[in-house]
Image 1 (tube, rainbow, N blue to C red):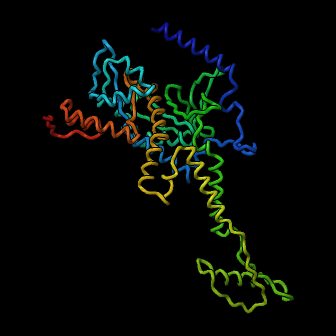
Image 2 (image 1 turned 90 degrees about the horizontal axis):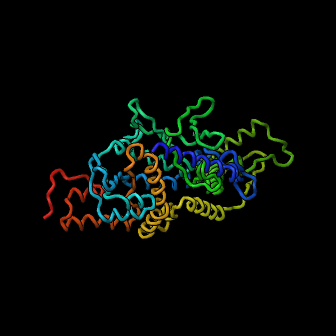
Image 3 (image 1 turned 90 degrees about the vertical axis):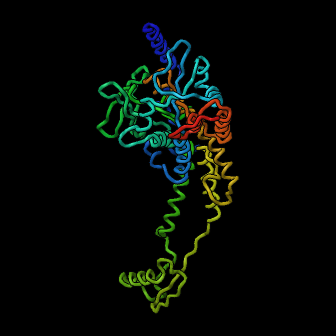
Length: 427
């Protein structure tokens, strides 16, 4: 076994060296494309992306992250032929859910060679994903992880071992402060975390990295939906800043008071007196009144070209561009002309096109990198978020319960409900 692993490691090193010579430099060392088609802007860094987590991007990122975090993340164990049964407490997996798992490419081969697949009901890994650490719970862990992937493109878990060599805590690292440290041959050696002079260094096996796919740098940073919509995000921020400036008057006067004829210039104290008089008369919504002035001054009202229609259309197109990058339907971002049918269709599209692939990406990464730290036979999988598929999964336990092939608590467990204190056997 040792010779086999060393041979695989040598082949992996050789293949990586060949790949590094064949491909252009990746990550920060490569050519960074401009942010716009004119080549004028630069790509935003991770810290700048985090600072832009607001407005429409905030709404879209939260819809996706909370949709993923709201789904049950179940732990399964596969038992091969000739292997002993798992020592942890397990429950049966019905035929419908087993077929759903078999349809996922990440688990198809594992389930095909298994003699039995069961759901794990009690395990240290489940406790870890539920309690996480002194600050976070299981929902916050998945939510924060997905939010960093939506905004920065990468997310990182620090998974240290306690003095007994066990993993009992997970810490979500701030993605904007994480930097991979690579050797000259391209291999990942460690992770640096922090800003400024003081940086912590973690071993490669102490950090679990998640990333969105990036065509320009597939082995380095991820490409976030927020970054994909960066031009639209910047446009929305400028629109919002412009609107705020207009509300605060933006140093643009509505009237100009000047000396009339040969009256000469207004003294500074006279100008301040008139300015204060105008402010007291018309400030805070009291516009449209009448002011009688006995001084020899000329009052001119200024007018500006209205662009409300163009700005409203531009805001809508900007919001739509951002929503498309995240895969969020517009019906979920507005209340105007939205009825129940549109809302249900929007939730279906969100589940099918956005939440489902995000769940698959997370569960495959966790099954490949986290589960083997506890047992090679374990794997994690989210429940199906798509409504029509979920309805079918909910109907299956009811049919099995009616046929007498499972108990009430087994059926309740499969649909995510707690067991009854006193169970009655059907029939």
